[in-house]
Image (cartoon, rainbow, N blue to C red; front, side):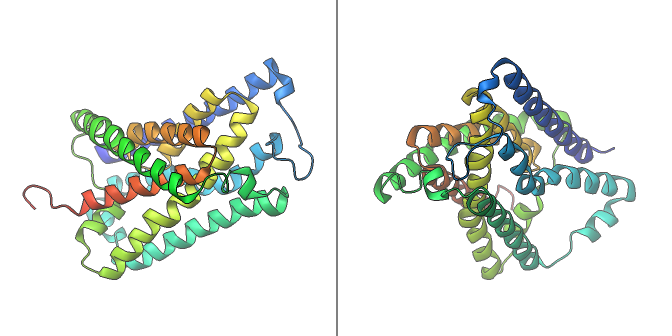
Length: 288
């Protein structure tokens, strides 16, 4: 097994540990504080319940499968050689982006549908979407985004990259990052920006901060929910050097959501964070 495959299996192990921690945490709180374990809330109730703990995994499963697929692909590349790995990295970057857009939109519609149509909840009220005006949302998003880029990208990200290089050596760039740096197509760049700064923040925040965090928080404790949801959010992105930075970033997003009461703030922070990273990716590296 090469270093790249080993890194992917570390991520897979981490995901399994995060899910195990979630199961143990929910089970422990169900035993110690059974009154928090509301099995089925009344129709249209704003509170989450145990049924949501089951439903939330339907859209989340599409993200949770990512570390499994990444580990399988890395193992296949290691056993079949570099030529097979290169053959898998087909051209068609625009096709890949369109596939990802469809993937995210499907997850978004499923999450929205489970809450609005299956559980009969008003998503706008549940996530505080009308709680704040546009001006404070923009202000809090920019301030939180700047802080997140600094602490997660420049401080923690630089440290973890250097540390992991000492263990696994130089890991390959994620395929979307590689394509973004190498592509000269303005269509590909535009679709990438739309996905990373529009669709992905909206869908991921609605699922992870809104639905998953809201459910785990209701059934356990805010601190436990912040930590375990952050771990799951970080690992599904499939990038070992980004694991700790994204974990901290998820914690900051949860805190912003808790403090503001509006999911728009965490969506805005997420969009700002992704936009900044795209700009940094486009800056030529030394020696390029």
